[in-house]
Length: 195
Picture 1 (tube, one colour):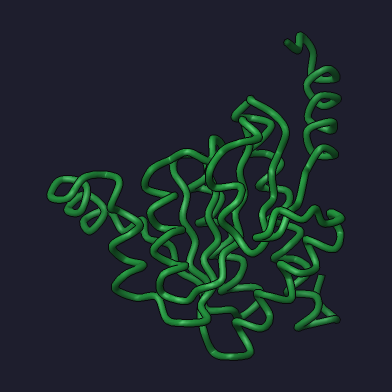
Picture 2 (picture 1 turned 135 degrees about the horizontal axis):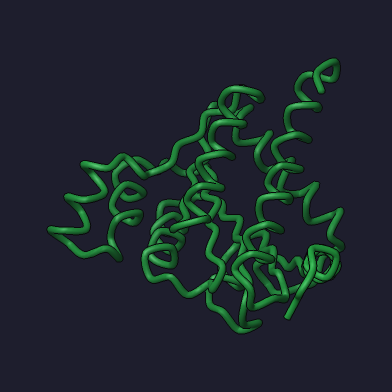
């Protein structure tokens, strides 16, 4: 356990450098290659006039909202999150919290869309159901997870980013940094003069 910010940053750096990337077949990818594949997937979705959907709970919900904002505002990529409160609460109340992301995917996903899911544990039922529903609708899937190496989300995506840590802070911060890279890279490819 850390006792100073220097210790915290040192352990955070180790978590970031421990990122493991795999494809759907479980084949390991170099981090740079995996990130570039994710960027190219976002660009392909945008060029086909499709959309990026994002789902996460708690801190991960905040991260996906930030990603949506950056994709829409800075990169001009259609992106949506499913955290509109009245709908979220109606679904949770009527059908159970495990359905709150699955239902919108079933309603709005189109073949070729991209779903990006974040779950620190990789075991959140509502995230797993959203990922499964997106695959059933013919969407591409990028997952970000952490904690246990055998978490089920980690093997579902076309590209899977896994942080080898059991600390929410380290996993979420790594996910936030990675998604910042992805959105910044998309933006600079589309608009080379912007920074």
